Image (cartoon, rainbow, N blue to C red; front, side, top):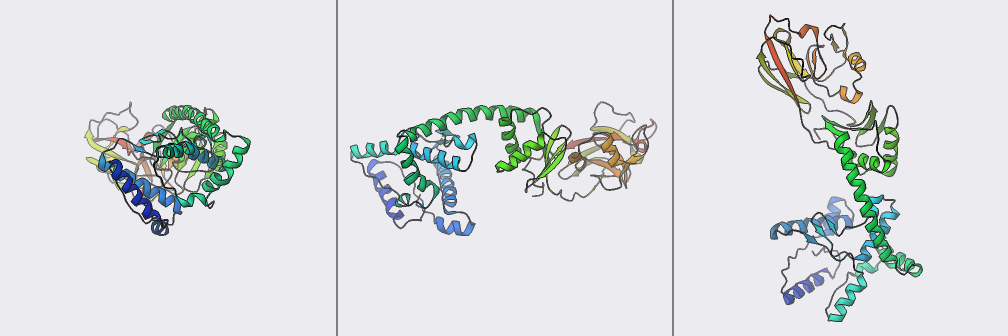
Length: 397
């Protein structure tokens, strides 16, 4: 790929075409104006170049139906990567650097020094070209390549090989933590409408917990934010603004919720058919025998007369409910009495008429909606809406 960054890049492309023609190797050559794209997108030049390069590689991979993309990173590149991640304060995932195999990316040269590759070409009389900008210390990687690593090698002649071994050891340990984290997330996390939660009542080892917290955030969070989240896991309750969402400790869980829920309009309840509350769930209604349903909190048989004019919605200020066998109370007090975690209260589906709640889905039915055995009955069956958790953004976003 000719990135059109250097004046001599077209000559580099011509060299590759001539070499591949001589060796009878198929070549796919593309030219992309990276500086123009970086200016348009607001990205840094290196970031834009990398993104466009991989987009081109992926496109060509699909065209030729290749199983893998082989990349030319070598051991010196790995040492530079390890040092750069170390300078940024990265954890084990970053310190592990590049992997020989990562998905469909394959780096067959990671075990070789650049000098070994150059010697291989020199002995066989094969020409090569080098990027002149690699000799300009204007980026962190170039500065490490030109100054940092040579100085380290004066003290530790085998530094580059040692850094590569260190990266490999870090990868092995990181893989173990990743496996433990996946197991923890499988049993202790879930996503619901507009939120996700992690059970932290019996937290795992901090290395696992911190990686799980990063996974729950679904985006980059800095060291201080992860530390604050870890502290919140150990608190009885509390809330933390992460910028893109809020983390809230309640009950046994740490919740990740939007900073502001979208407006969810009530839906008129169909007494024979399906009523959907976008982002929350749906209720299927059908006439039934006037017999209470006791074994499933998400299926209830209610009085058809009581349901006339009812809607499916979430809670509102002033809502009241009179659970079976109990007195009338504010819905907010019922949530507190039942120890419903605060983040769940705003996304609990309700069947209501005016400010009177007839059914708290999954919770209770009201006295005025109960069956006496003589009236028409409607069976309501609730299905939550499956929404892939998107890191705390509102569903509408």
